[in-house]
Length: 126
Length: 223
Image (cartoon, rainbow over all chains, first blue to last red):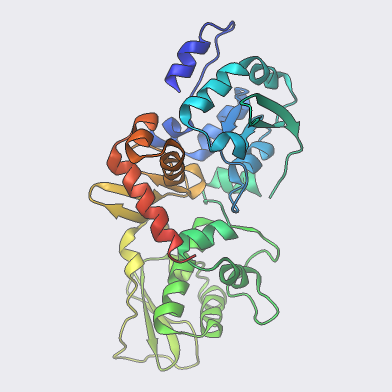
């Protein structure tokens, strides 16, 4: 992710990236970082798309009104390099998600020809 | 409800997820919390809840143990949970540091403070009881103030540990030290095509990817 951040630092304004696991590894409890993300208007890009009963993060993003982008299976099953390339390729669209109403949910997919796409979807709750 | 659970650091599991982590069939766990046509639910709580907290999850480990190794009837366990709550104002009796005894068809529990509580049946004061072996308890850390379970070591190999802490990432299993979930590293190994490539892509050691794969194998053995 550091490499993607370096590449996108040429974008103006330069985006700020943070890994969720950095918060976890540093021992920051959920009760601190989640409200903080909501307050600071972060966008969460996650591979947690609600399959196999794991719908926590998307549902929590909705509850806390955090805009979030869920990677679809077409993207999830690609190598890290291809995911990074897709993020860079569609960066302008990712940046536009920040102007959507707080708590919006987007789905990030990639076509078989390798073309990435982001679309607004209805949020689900648990 | 979600905000309360996140704010309170109680952990947050869908029933299906908890079933996977506890290595119990999903339908079985669901019947323990929600009941079904054949039986009443074992645990008290909100009728239609699809999510449970960490203490409930720890209790499922205890019930799994009682069912799997001792074949104790769910009715006995249900009575025990209910009696703990009603007669002793004891919530989550199996998520406390305790020793369980099964004697004369009844469940008894000895808490950390050495008091002994009969949780099912009518008789009191029995002696000479043999304790139930509860291996999972050695992997649980308890909060000294509440005396309730605070963390669970779900899996370990050498110095690498997979921990479940209700205050961190909603109680999801986390590989200690790097903050990644075993699921993320397991999936990375599949998509990148090798342990080494996954380790490089995520900036972790080969051993950390390996333990993640082993952990998922361990969970899937019960599926």
